[in-house]
Length: 273
Image 1 (spheres, rainbow, N blue to C red):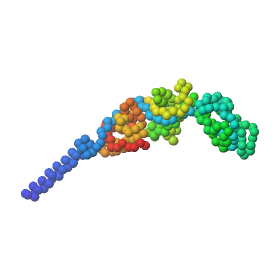
Image 2 (cartoon, one colour; image 1 turned 120 degrees about the horizontal axis):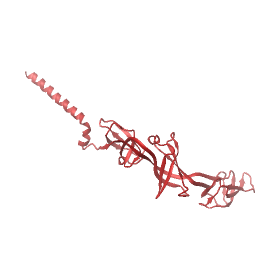
Image 3 (spheres, rainbow, N blue to C red; image 1 turned 90 degrees about the vertical axis):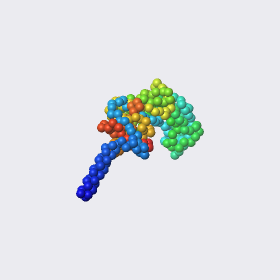
Image 4 (cartoon, one colour; image 1 turned 60 degrees about the horizontal axis):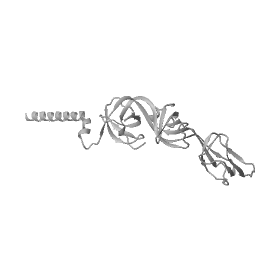
């Protein structure tokens, strides 16, 4: 009789342990909120369609530029321009006499190959210049270009002719995506400078407008910067890296999409990629 009681007690004890374990497994995701030693942030997932813009930053420079050189060692005998001067195609810029390997009294004339601004002068009259060294740099700012490197997750949404908005100080510069290079993850942005008439390279920030996209969005403040990524985890402890793609107001469009989740847990904010 005592043996049966002991056996029954053991069965009841094991059953209670199993029920407790099952209860802990079911409520495992809630431990994040109850256990103060686990520092995780609950992240709301918005699976919606929204207008997305991809941030860009870099140097907007002249679409045409060229350095005038002489193929042999020479002496600069005349210089008809100063820095920031505007010149037209065919204008005489400078003249030089060949000194090596043979001396020549016939001057070599350097002319502007296109309408441009004299952006830099490297030598003064009377200087001896080694072969192939640049004497004058010319830039045409009628159109301005910028090359930007983007992530794989962003390149799949960037197409040629998409609108671009850039900012330089208080000025807004409108442009478009001129070219995409998916092998090197590069895009070339172009802008017409005829209205603003900048005559120098500009450090700008702005956005590529990729239009409406359906996907997964979270609050943008979860990312340290637009070039960073974060590690997220589902309730069943599946973790993955989420990459920032673009902004939609205060939300961040992320990759990969998570269409079957409403909430995730933020494990780690990774350094900039």
